[in-house]
Image 1 (cartoon, rainbow, N blue to C red):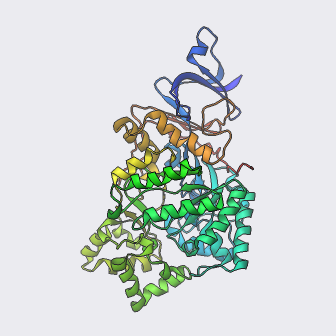
Image 2: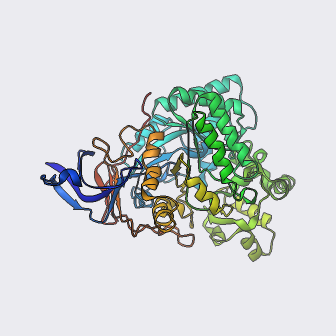
Image 3: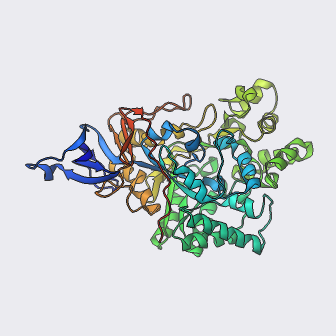
Length: 536
């Protein structure tokens, strides 16, 4: 007898097709039968050792977070309710060009310092890997949700070139090609870049194109955080489309949006650009989160020249009054490339987390508010934070536009990604609320998407991008990564004031056929494993 039958569920299967009522049978971590109501009429209904009454609940594939920053959180926090409670059963890690493999001892320390604001320093995690394969093996010891990995181009550049602002030599480029190939052979699904973050931003298009050719040969995809989401955003998107066209590589645009005042209402221009490329045969997808503010580190706003040489060189430049003055001019007057070519507006920069407890009184205030409370100008406050917090400060950037968010989420190439940073006293609520917010606010309350469309954006479409042959749909033979939610009550609990509140209306989540969330509570199940590239 099979392990589980989920009775009388309203199945939204991830394909975009209309929902239907069915009994779904699970055994051995897979869906072994989907018995529709019409087919069951007059027949004996399936039985199992456990029966779950799903009356009034929607059964869908588990949600796929196409842009996650849980690289250490999955190892640090076995509970991981921030994602499981949302119905997430798979996260894509290694984002924005910076993560923890492949590394050597030197670059591991540099990367830890560079992205402390994203993931913490990592002194509470045994960092006992160096290659991509070793990192994936570590995940296979048991984690809360499944995880795929992108080779991070910035980390690769740090390993082969260093943190200097210069072109790679021929030998260095060949080394980077080799590192990317090795990562893909070991199971990575593609390559990420952070082209407003050092050292990845120092790579020119020719260098990136060479790496994308390697990715294309392995059937992976390129996921760039491109060079601007502000001034020049449309040109930056076009650059990525053309670069991958020439390389013959699939493209997935990270946290796709059009931000800052210069881009209000301009999402249709971006979508027209993508539609032209898609109609010409390009393989393009994108992800977005359903909020207007962004989230990054305060150090990310600095001009690229200030980051050359790595974290210690940044701190040295900030400590020198003359050099700090140049940085200030680039930030406040010229428009730093780290701030997307737009002069910084300190009243839009909210401090969301610090690593030094003595600085915690800054959290929850904008840089301008914090400066006003101290009787100083905003740059003085920002500079002090950068130095005293050793570049670990995280921020929210209130620079988005609702009309752009809505337009992009309707697009035929759209998928969902939280871009969730789980560190800090007041993280962005997207880390805890992205997927229920899609279902509650943008489906039920606003009608921007139908339920079937939305679930397809969060399940079947991302699974297709990841080339996963047995995930993302409710189908016989598919993995039993499933979520059951109440369409009438599902909602994000997280807010900007209280960002760590778990969602409502998602009582059950199964990973590999096992209940990781049951009756709205986290179980002790750790059924997640690495999800590795499917060979072409």
